[in-house]
View: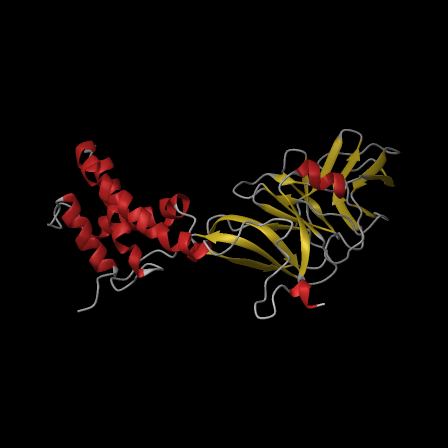
Amino acid sequence: MTAPNTLTAIRSKVRKITGSPSPTQLTDTQIDEYINTFYFYEFPENLRLFQLHQPYIFYTQANVDSYVFPRNEIVTINPPAYIAGYYSFWSQSQEQFYRTYPQLNNLLQVDTGMALAGPYSFTIPSAPFLRGYITPGSTRINSNVLISAGSAIARDDGFGGWVNEAGTALVGTIDYVTGICVLTFDQVIPSGTPINSQTVPYQAARPEGLLFYNDVITLRPVPDQVYKVEVQAFYNPTQLMATTDQPLLQEWWQYLAFGAAKYIFEDRLDMDGWQKIQPFYDKQERAALRRTIVQQTPQRTSSIYTEMVDFGGSGNYYNNF
């Protein structure tokens, strides 16, 4: 007989722990929700395990500098960062990053008001220039192109279109690479009024630095073509859906059962029940963590001597010369 480790076995264990043998007390669907809530949300936050630490890889697009981080798939990302295989600068501080790669606005007059709202056609000569982006989890547009004419304001939406100051869409288009623009304002621009642009021009190249801030990854320089970007990440585990599904490591099955039982006791306001199982929960948590601890034991803490690798045999690499 094989050792239990499937979703069916976890359900059975949960029923035993919580004293709920009958589906009239807890349905399988309810138990599965408790199991997956613990497994997907709390488990990776409690334990940053070796098995959940994997590379996160994405590919750049030419003239696109900002990339949304899949925050519901990955718990956290961390250095080192490699861009096209090159070890690259990593920062989580806007202050540090933009001191190294300043975002300096270029101000130019691009057209003149003609006593109408538009359309106005003009070319911003400082192209290419940065595009805006949308803050993840919201509709807030962080624009990088601004057109002003008296009190009228238009800004880019990050996708080649325009919005006004409040974020309402305007008619028109913008090409971030060529600088060709067509724009109709939301008000009449008086005749002779200067129409000014503010942009952040750049020269595209292979990126050498990465900023991770507000779940957005920003690269500098702006990519001039497709590059592979690789950083380290702690992933959320895959939820258990079918009765034969197993956790990523089969040995975690009892920890998941006690974690689900904890939620059930909390929902029942049964603090006595939770206190009774807590020692067993803690035991399973230590067991789940043990493999990662043992795996990391041979790896010494990084220091200035880390690169002096011992290859064995004839001794240290540097002693072979």
